[in-house]
Image (cartoon, rainbow, N blue to C red; front, side, top):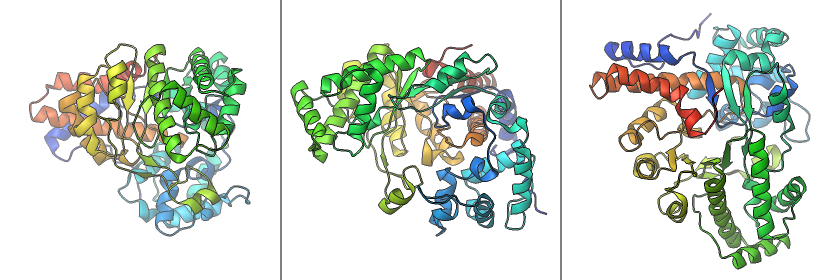
Length: 471
């Protein structure tokens, strides 16, 4: 039977002299605690600590990195996940679909993450194929009945020190508060404030979002001024619950304030259901400016994730919902769109703006030069479609001349797939070790400096960039 046992030198440089240095750099950080400042694993997973129902629920269902590859090969999403309101897919049959098509993932990041999970978490080194599908499924299913494979036990096994979630401003954060108060839970799960649904009055979900926000804050959102007050109040609630950061995912990076009267006019039109798409865009760009302003006041680290065309395929959205693999990148620019906000707040000490992109041409063209001048700007890690070994190395080569290492976010796993967290961080640590080793062999860094940077990238940078207290 073919084996996929992971090679100890995976992702390290092929040149023997460079590889030797990279091995040592990786060894220094391989077992360092994981800091995950941005992701989508819900706090309820750890607060409830329920056993996982099946290998399919744990490793396949809802992981759009996996399902989109199958769909791209002509395999219906309905074969691996149930549409809303329809009967659940048989988990074993869904697993068989994945196994029969595993060849589609060769040399991809998904293959690396998935095989890492099989090997490192479950001790399974057999190649996933149609012939091995049931045996692999049964072995994982058996292990999932053991308490050692419940969420909290895995969290501790992964070595996670900090896990940040992504949360609506109206969330009560009860699960976060329960985990923080639980003496048997040793990690930290921090909420992240994400107000996207309250930003565009022409969007279908805007009014319900305002209603939830008003109820949670006990502040009327019937006016633009009231909305801003409610957002400030909820940010304070998040900070009291341990949150240090916000996150904003918008189509573009334009942050342009409106005159108060114009913002109130568009707000009123939105309440009547009459805001146009153009008005919604102007209002959203104003709210982005206001969120940057709020971060300059309260010190919450602001992550900006623009440049994704959400829900590109409308029929899939209607049947399966959002976050099902049909969000696609678009070209992105930052320098002019953020000029007003950075002129107003960018050289202060309170604002910290971590900029992400899926348009990697902007790394060297805009993001690194901006971080090189503005104290407030940091360059986010390769995100989403760039979360690959080759793109990670291109990122370092694109930004280091202008931004260095300290003005970066540290690695961001940005995942909903709980068990992929250690796999993703392992990939990043190996790639960084290889890049640093390449600088040593070309005499751009000493081995001592490279070792210090490798340590900083996992033990210092994510804490400091995201203002996370060390415990």
